[in-house]
Image (cartoon, rainbow, N blue to C red; front, side, top):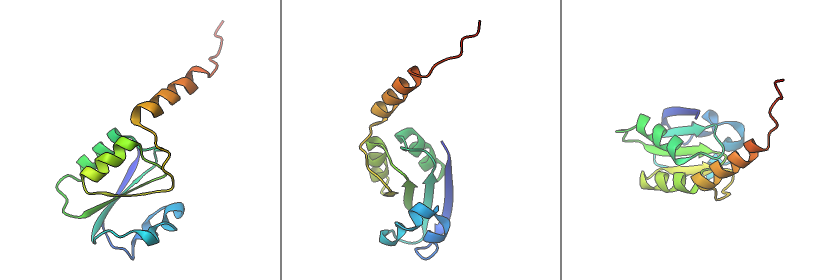
Length: 116
């Protein structure tokens, strides 16, 4: 999990701190200022990764904006439970389990070297 946390962000400053693909989407964000922005590298972001990031900012009185390419269903529910808004490029509908299952299948088809 890789997350970048930026605190005390205003709506004017938001497009400047976001990676380019998300900066273009930030015009439609309606989050109360100031906000704490969590930008994830994971795709999709699982609930465990979001839970850890939210724990790091526990006690913050700022609004929360979570940014990533996609979030699992459980991560979206967790964000909603913490009154956090999500900014994502897609919504595929992965669950934590279904994404892990497909990753396992993909990994099992990778050839391993023959060490003879």
